[in-house]
Image (cartoon, rainbow, N blue to C red):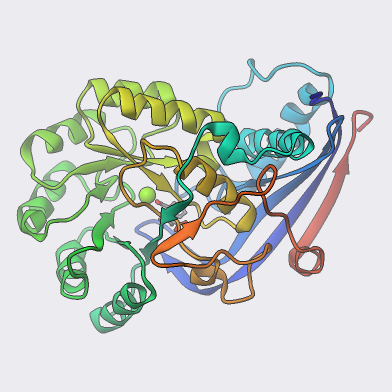
Length: 365
Ligand code: OSB
Ligand code: MG
């Protein structure tokens, strides 16, 4: 099927979160995203750019992504040229890749999961719990997610509160549900060593990104010296980096961010994990339903042996707040969409209500 690109619409959307989501580096109260609707020779497709509003997570922002698309990626794509001479801007690239692929797969009547060879019909639900001011609030939130059926609870931590947060959460999370932490790179090596001394008895699934994204040797030191598995997130900017950190024994598991790496690069990263006998888990970016559909299709691959960040639409956006029909938990899992392409699309009036800016780009500009 012909992927020739005819038109791209960019929808800048704002979705209020049910509550502010706080990490070691940034607080998000409103989810901002860029939805791409492409028209190719095959038909219409959708993609979501998951870059955050601020550069606090991995540097890329939603406004960078818009400019990268407008000035660099789309002119090449309209000209039928490859993107080989563009480095970085992976979230912008991922959104375009997803939309073009969605158009093709819709035309061919094949679901993204089937196209990937990802056979799992449903994926374990997992939820990220932000930093909060008091431990009672944290305990209540964790208990409610366990009650809702989540199979993995990931608590954000930062230096000064890691032990208290994880000990409090542990008391609410029984066997059968994984408990994990995510430090978003906020610990220095010596702080991380002290943290692990205190939490190695808590039987955590993993700690995501304890030290800075570039601190590969520090993570290798931790893998050697601590019992709790180390999972890398921000460090993993490509499948090549994944193979490299696996070879350096700098991680026990990888969080694969489909929104940030793109669909095909996520598959290659998954393959690197399988080859290196490292566990993979699906990583979320507070996606709307469009990005969540892509995440679930990729998470249906067999190498995702650990539960990750696949939460229900309600977790961040409330019962009817997502852009698509909501993803809901059934028996601790989210169903992988089976319809052609992503298997979901934005509900037109929801999209209209959430859109704060719209632009239409064509080969003629
Ligand atoms: O570090 O895993 C992260 C959200 C946005 C950016 C980075 C991260 C996160 C989360 C939430 O932890 C994951 C989710 O979408 O549930
Ligand atoms: Mg993370």
